[in-house]
Image (spheres, rainbow, N blue to C red):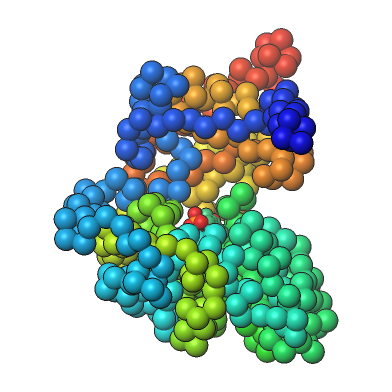
Length: 407
Ligand SMILES: *Cc1c(COP(=O)(O)O)cnc(C)c1O
């Protein structure tokens, strides 16, 4: 049996490799930053265009110092879950700080946002309830919903007519929860939160937003998608990560109404059965939130660099999804072309990653770049030049030197 399993897996891996769909991990031998060193290139430095390091805090000296001091003061690990003997006062301090920052009543930490989403639905909803979910929601939301007994409804991405139809169908359920990513990470587009909140209010439903790709850099003070639209008080449940803009180490949270958070402390399985966060990580995250809250300069540069990259690539004729988010997806359609461009650009010492099925729909392959406040105008200009060269190279290959329309 064991041999049969291994043969089956080997077959699967060979097929992925043959179809050029095998994910190969690049080993970084430097700190995470706008410029990193890759083992595969013998430690050569490349420009990093694919980290969730939106504010450039992953290797910020103030975060490092906070973590170092905390290591000395609080030690390394907690060796317990929160309710046994794993709650350090820095956990509560971070939960309070996140609530202050996000303008919510209370917050509960998880080992990751994946865990937060995996534990939330089952704890709050059962067969008498309904959950209505955007079709492009993050995998952790999809899995979390699978784990609960609530009736499931799905609407096409940001399709408000379909959402309203689902709300109408679900109106006899006890609790109805509409769930959306604040920003859809493969496309760099925001949820239509104003209309979602309007509709939810009209049908008496609750709203949950996973704002992992927004908190720290979208909206006033970087408070995220609800703040961007002035809807902080209409969102009942917020989930998010410490693993992206807020320092990028790890950790996640659920923030919102006090009773919801209190109940999750009693019932959310990833909270009850998984170890609590390292205190040093929490101390550094407190500093990350301070830097984000007072990070208007960082956000100004992030907006300018995003505008620079999106504008130039669009002018070159690339199909760039979304309108203003630092996630900059260049849609190639064909997976092979995405790989070719990524290889070409990496040969110019710029790291970008191609995405294809099953991470994105078949025929919608893309290169997804992410701009950081740690990038400067020269960095972004280098990316633009590399894409222009890739475009010319592909055309000359495809048409024997003929010059014509853009890619
Ligand atoms: C990244 C991400 C997650 C997972 O966050 P982790 O803390 O890394 O587990 C969850 N939801 C969304 C929308 C994300 O973008």
